[in-house]
Amino acid sequence: MTTNYAPLLTMPKPESSKSDRDLQDEVIRYLADARARKKSSAELPLSPEQAQKAEKFGRFLARRYYRDRLARSFRYSRMFSSAIGRTAEQVVDGEFFQDFLNECVMGSLEAAQRVGQMAVMHMSNVLEPGVWWEELLAYEQAFFLQAATAEAESRTDIPRRGRSAVSCAFRWNLPEILTRLKSAQNIGNDLKKDVLLLFSRTAGGNIYVVEMEGSSELIWRHTDGARNVDQIASAVSLPVKTVQDTLQALSQIGAVVLPPR
Image (cartoon, rainbow, N blue to C red):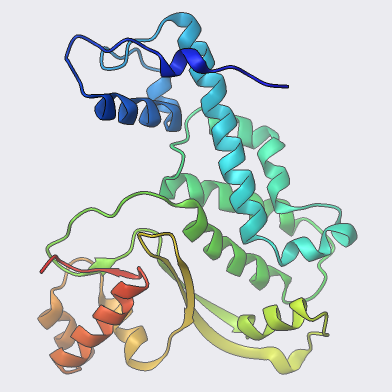
């Protein structure tokens, strides 16, 4: 079945003489933001019929956006779908998601956090395939935050963490667990190991998961948006050059946002 949303694309320009690009951006923001669609806006005048179609299309876009990213992010737990009888992307059709659609800003960190929590709750109420199941879901939730957050980074005067970047401590060697799951190998207690993983996303959409330890972990933890490079170096008792090099490396994977040069 094909739905025609052409009227949304042929709206007359408002009298404020906005450019076509400005009007296009307004339409995109309107479709992505459920709260904006609940307000009447002189910036984007719509007839009642157009507003109704925009609401329907906006909800369709959000469902598709999060369904796709849930499927890609929770792909390892999905291997057990036949055994546990569920998948993470099923939350898109659930009751809580319908309430979420009434107020979500598609692509925002807040929305990604809420959907990720829904998915983990949905996948937690099962007969666990292994004692590592909870940590696998935590890994996939952190990955989902990167895949589902598309907010642009704002300019900064001091180093700060990327908007969706997050570090997670695990009691199991998750990278090796994923390798064994892909090759259908057993997961034993030999994989019990404390690891700290950093999840981040670049402006171009590339997602990174790296293990942190030593000085890198210290610098990351103290890059809180309140300290400049010299203050970070003082807090972690490391040379300024070491801090600068580490921050530069972290910025290349989207884990840190640096002031423009």
